[in-house]
Length: 178
Image (cartoon, rainbow, N blue to C red; front, side):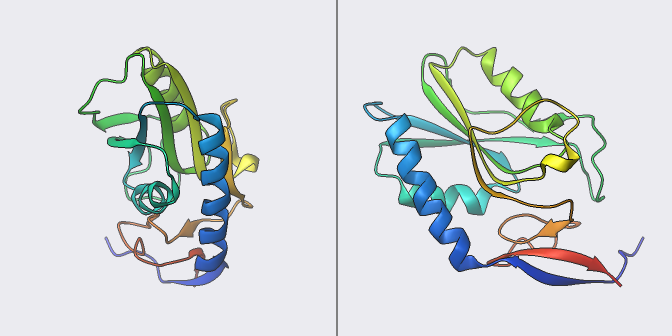
C-alpha cells in the first residue's frame, strides 16, 4: 500500500540540535562523574543518530549497547503494545546505565524498557530523550533529560522515520500530509 503524499517543514535545525546535545553532555558528565564506564543503551532504530552525536560529546569512558523495541510498525500511531525485537548483548547488573531514546510520545515504550532494565539491577539508571511530546502521554513517565519539548506533531529526521524514510535528514522536521 502506498504511503500518503507529504511534505516536511523544518522544526528544529541541525545547529540547534548540536548545541543542545553539547549542553546535555555536560549535565550527563556531572551526573555520572567518577563512573568507571557508563553504558549507553540506545533504543533502536530512532536513537542511532542521537546516540552517535551524544557519545562524541562525552568525555567519560563509555560502552554502547542497543535494544530494539517497537510499538509503531510503519504507521503514525502507537499500537501501545511494546515488543522487544533485539535485546542487549551485554550485562548491565551493577553498572551505570543511560537509556537513550529518540522521542517520548505516549510513554509506553520508555516505561516498558525502564521496567525491563530495572529487572537487570543496574547500579544507576537514567534516561534521556531527544524529543518529548507531553501532550500525548498516556503513561506517567518522563526522561531525566530532554533535548526539546515539541507539540503534538508527527516528526521525522535525525534518525526518526516515517515508514523507514527520512531518518537521514540532519534536522527534525514536521510531516505535513498533502
